[in-house]
Length: 85
Image (cartoon, rainbow, N blue to C red; front, top):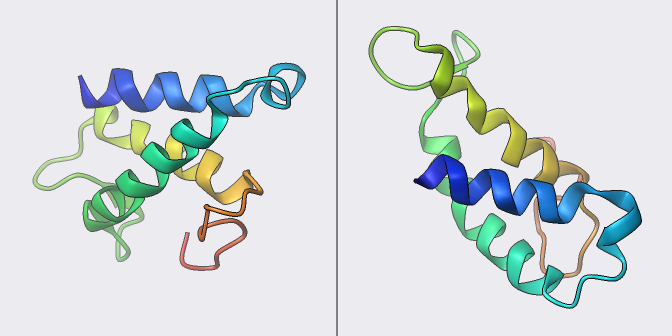
């Protein structure tokens, strides 16, 4: 469910042709920004992977919302071009 929500946010924010016209973009950015700390808790900097325990390919899907958080310029997004990401 979390992956579906984050995927929807990524889709809504990242489509360049639509993003300027979306009236709910601010809400989506807010939801995404709230999820970034949770995603980063799940990141292992030694191995460069997400998840705990054995490597599972679906655990790596968290990279997509992080990419959107990193590349979306918005006044409410402190993660825009943040080296931590």
